[in-house]
Image 1 (cartoon, helix red, strand yellow):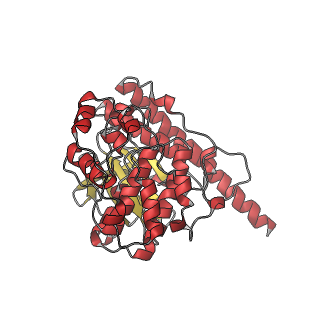
Image 2 (tube, helix red, strand yellow):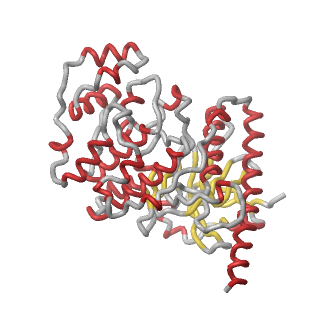
Image 3 (tube, rainbow, N blue to C red):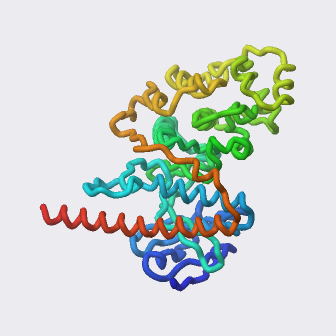
Length: 391
């Protein structure tokens, strides 16, 4: 059994392994940690640490009381399952190995390690990203020349997720991580999928919530992420949220004032009668249009934004088509924008057992992760040795 070492980082208590690969997470240079020094919430803590094996900084996310409630355990199980499915290796590999080893999407946060401490807290270890998009927007430090590059990376990651039938469901500036090279990664994938409609409608942050979530429509899909990405895009451009209602009513009214009254087709999909009656009581509105709000940018910028922020999800642009927009022409390369080999099976989340059963399933997932990691390391070493022998 691995020996664990307890440490305190700016008031946050961590319990990390000392043996083998798990011994690498020891704090270093706390005065220089800045953004990741110790992020504390009621659900988790995040700290930067030094990876002594790979000689790099990593982010260590400690999930507090993961089995406190069934909902918390389900969310964590979902996140670990998705992270395993989306884990990737950017090196070419000639052997037949599990699919998650061969993925090539850099825009999805990928685990370096996963483990459970003796206190039954779950730790997720990932590459360290220096900041998030929220921090950059508020600091007004994003130059105009960087905006297309950031949006391109965001959409590239979404294209891969959506091709695997995985909607993010809660895309917001805080879930977009960025490092010092301006590389972008999407995180926080532990939210309910499109099939779990009731729970998902409450998860997305209001400013970035798609109208079909806001209006409690019967069905929705990955297009909710396109709306959120459009809101984030607009916020980067103008430095403030595009729709900033203090509640659902104000949020919807802000949408209609800008985009106009939604079509009857959208209204027909609303399942809440009280919501439907409220909308029907509002006067018809043509909408002022995005061009009047964001007038300092060229036509290619406005064209893409207008195609992302469409009330009807069927008319809303896809991530794949958005990547081909003229605004992103400098970065678009269809041969380097991969899609998943197969879709994610959401049915595994439809049969939740008791909390104890879910705990055992989580343990099994983490054990399986380490088995897959050993295979991945073996293949990597084999590839390197073969390549060296051929030189």
